[in-house]
Image (cartoon, rainbow, N blue to C red):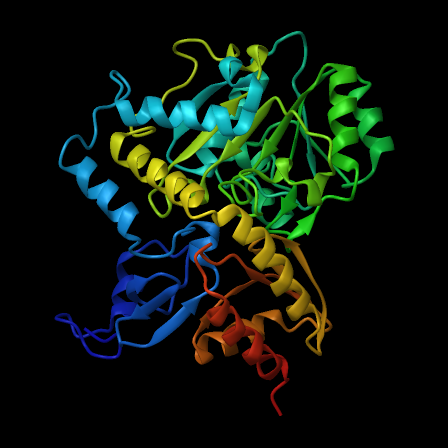
Length: 408
C-alpha cells in the first residue's frame, strides 16, 4: 500500500508508525524491498542506498548466498539459548578469532551478542573485572560506543550523556592525538582500559591521527592498561581489511595487537549480531561463569547469516575491491566544487563540505533518489554495501554538484 494512501484506520503508514512506535525516531520513508544497493519504498520509488543501514548491509539486500544460508538454517534450528551450542556458533567463534587474532587465535575467545552496544557492554564488564584498583576508563573526544548506560558512559557526545548523568561510569575523555594527556592519565595507575575507534564514524568519519594508535598500544602496555578497539562500524571489511586496526593505510605497517575488539553492524549482513573478541589469555579469562550472559546472542540463525557474509566477502574478494574502489571514489568526490576533502577508508567515506549544509544536502539527495546521512553539519557520510557497483557510485558523483548548490 502506498504511504500516501489511507490504511484501514484512515491514516498513512507514516502516521500509523507515529501512533504506534515510541517517538525516539522520526522516519518519513517506509521502505518495502531491496536488491543489492537499491531499495524501493511503499510508493514504488527507487533509491540508491549509500548508507547501507548505517554500515550494516555489506552484501546489500537479498544476496542469494545470504538468503540461502538463512533459509537453510531456519529449516534446521533457529534458537536454542546458550544453555546449548550449535555448529554455526562454534564455527563463527573460530572464524572471528582467526580473523582478529591471526597467529594468536588459539588464545582468543569470543562472546557473541545481538548488537554493537551489547558487544561493548560485554567488553566494559570484562575490563572492569581486572581488579587491583583499576576502575578508570579512558575514551576519546568524538567517540560513539552505544546508547545503553554502560556504552553511553564511553560516548563523548554530551547531548547523549547529559540526560543520564549520575548513572554513567567513571570515564575520562581525551583529545585524539594528545599523547601527553594519554600518558599522564595512564601513569596514575588506575586505568582499566583505553577504548577507541580507528575511524570515528559518528563524529564525521574522522580517522585517528597518524601514529596515535601505535603509541597508544605502547603506552597502555607500559602502564598495564588494556587496549580495546571498537570496530562496530569499521569491521567486517568496511575499510578494505577485516578490521580497521589491520589497515596499513590507517595505522601503518606495524601490526597492532589490541587486547579486546568489538564488532557488529556488517557482521550479519543485515541480521542482528555482534561480538566481543578477547585476543589475549588475560582478557579471555576476565569473565567467569555467571558474570555475563545473553539469551539470543549467538543464536544459530544469526551465526549462519554471519558465516555466509564472511564467506561472500572472502570468495568475491570484496576486501581488495573495497580498498581500491573506495580510494578512487574518494579522490573523485574530493575534486567536486564545494567539497573540502573526502576522508575515511574503503567504503566508509566522509565528504567534508565547504559550508555547513549537510542536512539540506541529505534532504535533496533523498528527493533525487540517494540515501545518505549527515553525522556533522558539514559532513556527509557514505557507508554503502560493499557490492555497490562503480556505475552506481558514478551516478551519485555526477549528481553531487547539483545537490550541493544552495537553493535560490
